[in-house]
Length: 144
Ligand SMILES: [Zn+2]
Image (cartoon, rainbow, N blue to C red):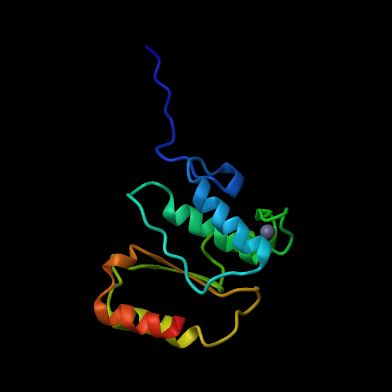
């Protein structure tokens, strides 16, 4: 019997590639199309359904300088930097290991400033349910 190694998780790069999250994708695409983007989006669901992946696609789409409709082009500077985790305007925080009020303080302070070179300044907070109550409160204040 032949064995074919499949990647454990296929990572979609565009909304079009995302499988099985139609309602979420629709909501995000509509937000971009209409230009009505909320201050925060909460992605909820079991492990592995693509919450972080979707949030990254959304971040790329929001800051893409030559989007194809609502899809990120994947080729502009912003898309490349975001995909590589190097964009100064898309900051990821892993709340599983950084859940204290001191961990979110830089976000609270930084987010008062405009994005450096992009349309939006975006914070992706992974495992945000792990944040302490104090950290949550600090973050919520910045969203108000
Ligand atoms: Zn792009």
